[in-house]
Amino acid sequence: MSQSIILPVSYIQIAIRELSNKGITAEQILEGTELSVHSLQEDDYISLDQFISVILNTRKLSNNPAIGLLLGSILHPSTHGSVGWAAINSPTLSDAINIFQRYSQVRTPFILYTTLTQGNQYIIRLTLTDNLKAAHTIFIEAMLMLLQHIIEFILGRPMTEASLYMNSFTPSYVDSYRKYFHCPIHFNSGHLEIRLPLSWKDTPNPNADKHMYQIALEQCQEAHHQLQRNVNISTEIYDYLSANLSHSPTLKHTAMHFGITPRTLIRRLKNQHTSFQKIKDDVYAFQASSYLRRSTITIDTLSVIFGYSDPANFRRSFKRWFGISPQEYREQQTEILKKH
Image (cartoon, rainbow, N blue to C red):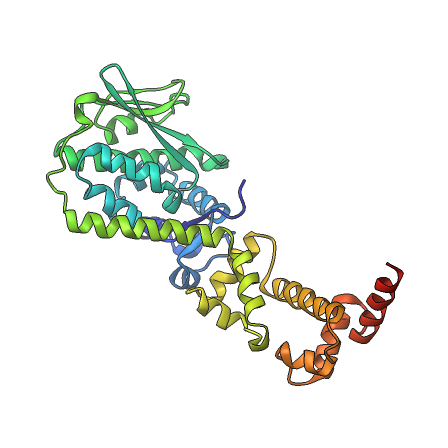
């Protein structure tokens, strides 16, 4: 499983609100996830593993095997953020589905959307790209319900002429499928897909707001760009610290520079098996060794360049990085150069 996958906390907040009506507390839902009500308010995203744990908790606590269908039924497109807003304001039905194809990574990076045309059918195929463990079915059911909501929002009526194909066995709660979905359902299929009449593909969206569509589309593009930065945030931080050696940025200042909270930065780096301090040590160790090998600058001056108010502190840091003092390192490197 990709360790860098992150998901919006809004989905978790919906589950908490729904189950609170049944006397189930947020603390129970978050058990075993290292999450708290406070962290959900402070952070925008959680890891995929945490998300899976929460979803499995909701199924266990609710004692409802159809919890995926229930949660999906209350997912308004706006819950899907800019992706949802762009979809419900798209000019046509196919434009709405294209939004999911292009920007699914922003909200549900574990699902790949593909569209096909076969005969007189317009097919929306879903493929899972990550192992969702025991939560697999719950995720799929919720996303299919969301797609039904958007399709029917544009059609202005139930999608009774459509067909849903599930690449899984018929569940014990199959009656719930018939309750929530408005079209025939076929299990044990080779693919997971919704098949629509081809004539629906270019159905104009009577609710489309051109201005809102453009705004949401720009937000999708920005969110996608930001996601790419988040995936590579350790590299971004490395470059940022390298460019600001003398300022010796703190975790708080670095998080502020990237427009996130310190807690979020810590979590995202943890997902990449690193930490702010480790990256900072790597940057400073590399830069210090480079200065000592390639220049005759004094060690006291070097400590100032690196933002140390006391040269003794720089010497201690250097010894922690390399096991020897800066002077010993310089002499060692000088000897190596003489031999070559």
